Amino acid sequence: MDNTTYDKAKKKHISKNLFIYILLLAITASVLMVYLFKTYYIGDYTLLVVFSILSIIAETFLIPLPKIGAVSVSFALTYSAILLTNPLTAVLITSIGVAFRFPFVDGRGRVHLFNNPIYKTIFNVSQYIVNSGIAGIVYVFLAKHLNMGFEFFNPFAGIASLAVDILLNTFFMSELMHLLLKEDFTYIWKSNFFSMMVNVVLVGLLGILLAFAYNSYGIGGLLLFFIPLLLARYTFKLYLDMKKNYFDTMNVLVRAIEANDPYTSGHSLRVSTYSEAIAKQLGLPESKIDTIKSAALLHDIGKIGIDKNILHKSGKLENEELETIKSHPEIGANIIADLSYLTNIADIIRHHHERYDGKGYPDGLSNGSIPLETSILIIADSFDAMTTDRPYRDALNMEDALNEIKINAGTQFNPDIVDDAIAALRKAFIILSE
Image (cartoon, rainbow, N blue to C red; front, side, top):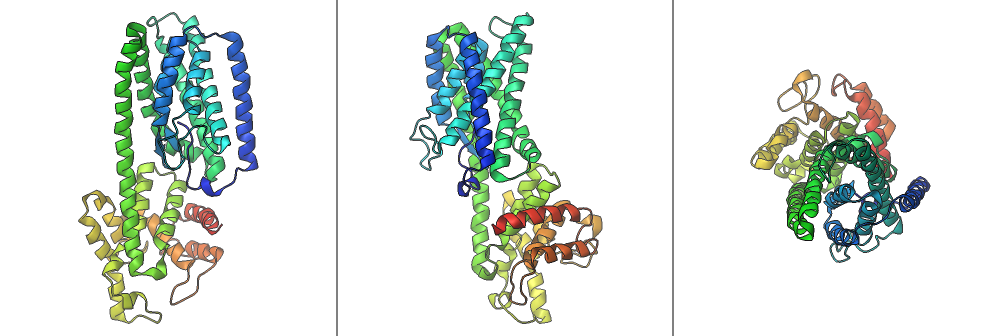
C-alpha cells in the first residue's frame, strides 16, 4: 500500500511533525540503501529490467482506497524478486515502480510521474525501500540458516519475510494517516489495515507463483502469470467501485432531503460524521461503522413526505402537526425498505427518535430493545440538533449540548455509551468547526 490524495489532507499543509516523520524515514531508507549496495550486487540485470517495467505497470494501476491511500498488486512482483534474487535487486525494482508511475492514468493528479507534492514521492519510495529491504534481509538470513523448501523458496523464511513487510507497511501508513488526519493510530491500524492483511497475503502467494514461473520458464512464464495478477486487481477495483457507488447514492438521497428542508442543510452529513466518531470511539468494526454512517446520512429521508409548511413553521406546532412530523421515521423506513441494498438500515432509521426510557416514537422501544447502532444515531442526531440554530430556538454551545447528553443519560440516551459519545463528539465538533 502507499499514499495518494486524501480528502481531509488536501486542506492541510505539511506539518512540522509530518516533515520530521518523513525526513527520518528518508534517512533510514538512505542508510539502508548504502548497506544494501555494500552487501549485495545485481546478479541478473534481465530480471531487474523486466520486473521493474512490470512494477511500473502495476503501480500505475494502483487502486485508491478511502482515506488510507491505495493498494497495488506490484507487491507480488516485489515479493517475487525477494525470493528470486536479493534485497538490493528487490528494493530497486519496487522503488522504480513507485517513482515512475505512468502519468496518464489519474486525471486528478493522484497517480503521475514523480508525485506532487514531493514529500509524497519521498515517503512512498522511502517506505518501499525500508519495507522490502528489511523483508529481503530477513528472508536471506533465515533461508541461509534453515535449509528447507524449494530451490527458489524457503517456506519458513518466506512467511517471516512476508510478515515483516506487512507489519512495516501498515505501521508506516498508519502513522502517516495519524499525522495527516489526526485520528487514533491504533484505530487506523486495526480498521484500515488489519482487514487488508488477508488480501496482501493472497497477493504474496501470487508472488510465489511469479517466482516459480520465472525460475522455471523465464520471461514468458512470468508474463503468463502476470495476467491473473492484473485480473485480481480488476476484481478488487470492481468491489471498491461498487462501494463508492453505494455512498454516492447516499449523497444523492441526502441532497433530496435537504432540498425539501434547506433549513437543516448539512445536518445529515454532520450527524453521519458524529455517528462515525462515536462508533470509532466504541471500537466497532468497519462494517458496522459503514452501516451507521449510511443510516445517519438517510435518517431524515422520511421528511420528503412531510408538508413543507409544517417543516418550516417557526412557531409552536399544533398536536396534529406534531404527529405529522413524528411520522417521518416510519415514512423513511418504508422508503428505504424498497431498496434491497439499504434494507439493513431501515430499522435504524425507523427508531432514531426512540428513547432509552421508552417514551420515544414510533414504537416506544426502551433499554435493551434499542440496538447499539440506533443508540449511537440517537445521540449524534440530538447533539447536532442542539448545536445548530432552529426556527424555534438558538443553538447551544458545545459544552452545554454535551452536558445535556450527560444529564439525559438513562432517560433519553443509552447510559452505557454516553461517556464515549461525549469524548467522540467533543473532538468531532472541534474538527468540523475549524
